[in-house]
Length: 220
Image 1: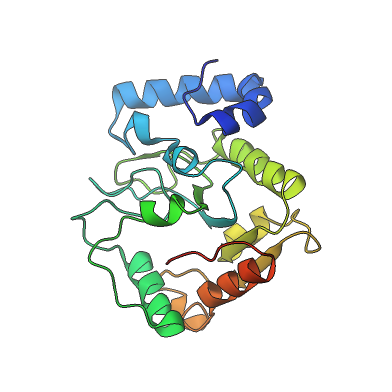
Image 2 (image 1 turned 30 degrees about the horizontal axis):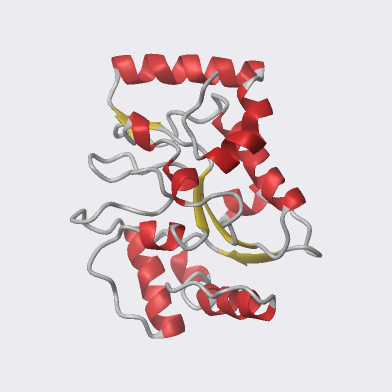
């Protein structure tokens, strides 16, 4: 199957695209786009990879599902395009950035600026039906995104994994602490952010680690 994804990822994930589960997933996704309103747009499904090549990846932020409201999801976890109001989790991320690094709340929630610097904004499930959270779970996306995380964990070194919430922490259980930095915190959702996400200091910790390893810090 010819999947349209950035070349360095295509090369490394070629074997995944040939597996039976991926054929089945592709068939399901095609049917969903034909019969329902699905987010993000088809050409934006692999946006996280297209903005952030394998070579460039130095931070991974794991989300669960794309946003399921109109105009929100554009293929980068937690991000919304310019002009779209901040979802509550994203607002809490910006509040923590303000507390941690003194950065003012930005005028828009498009995190492409992070992705272009090497932050892979990866959701576990890359598509969703409008207004139905979790509607594309257990169709094969999780197998695919696990394979992505494994590739990074095995073939790269000194990557920071920001693991927010139990789901992300469970998904990244196979990442070696010897080769990478894993940062754990509750999810930035309003339901859990006050239990330790706000105050976690992940952004300053990430930059300190990158600098220590001789890598450029992220301009958050």
